[in-house]
Length: 552
Image 1: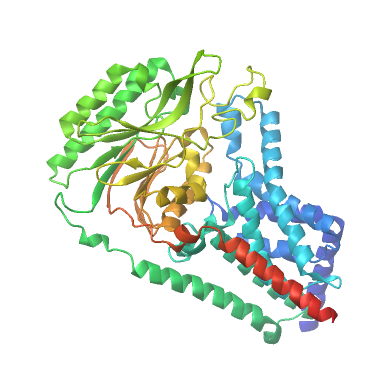
Image 2: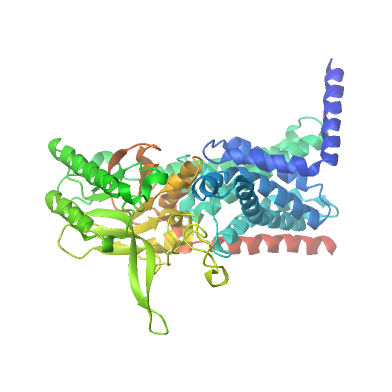
């Protein structure tokens, strides 16, 4: 019976091997597709880790660097085609492109981002291959930090597209995500690759010996144990140090803030219709007045700030003084300031002396102390969604996919808004996925991160993905974050990334939470990504030193 089982498993293994030798590209592409299940909205981290481990085992059979690069390109394309699938809704439904062009653009973007996975595969094989075989000890040392370096390049090259870094799969894991305050989301990505590489070593040992052996499995099992114990131990320690929200203090002198976020749930197809302008503006005004009145009647602590989402007012506020007067009247009645997303415009002079106008995607803070409103202009714009790259080389007839005929201009940079109760780090939609820029806001003194967004023109899967990335910014910088979204997901997190409340997608509702401004004491705030080149040079140095010694 035992021999029969062994022969059957051996035959099955041979069939799998034969299929792989015939269709290696299909295997790798499929592994990439499967790995996408680790990202939101499915969030199956175990499947992702196993898929990456199998991908690393496939790389061991590649004897040429060009082949390794192709394998990485295929794996990355499969992963990104699925995890970026929400773009089809943006381009086809809201952008008006036909399906063939939509899928072609999705494939092109996925392949471009997969170049970084190809670069990872090329570098990993080049460093770890020795005498025609893979040195797994080198792979364990080099692959994690090299993956982090490739992700760092993905954020920096051209305008950057740091969507769905590997580390974001841990956004919902209270303990594991705490490592982000040591090295940003990249440290979580490196840790994930270390787990996959160790699992690959375990699978490799089993395939070589054909049976389970504690002797060959001991090293990878101990490595996995150390990795897991470190992450969970550090996370538990950081959570124990967190402030206890049960000790909420009352009174005006309290450092605690009560923030209200309003989710109007305005359909994207109607949002910019002029005939709907009064209706949707009044929705936000009415919801705000009602929640403030309810809060007062219930004898609750007074609300310090109300936040409306990105472009909650879908018109240029400078040209609509009546609407501005309504907001000011609401503030005068309630005594509560309002921060809202709104498009704005500013005049400027051309070099020839003619006049022109800049258009901005902005956030305006209407204060309650009689001072002038403050404005923040979005500076990291979405290519093709908010502006056309290389506009001077593109015909004027080529328009961006979102509403409006004019390109938005870039704002002055990561500069906090100075509110009387706290310094606010504003993140308009896409800006929340750039860790370096959020870190810069905290460096400039931001004590509370405020993300306003309109994910209505994304597909359904983009909402939880965007939320996971935004959540990680609070952990990295040890600063709480509040998020107001037009159609969801509206949410708030403390400086450990713990959820304080949430309004789900496609609901008209509000969220009121209490939090304390953050101190920004995370290690990542001080070192940023400096650890990546340092560890990369260190690992390369050890590998080269080992090679030199083996040749002498």
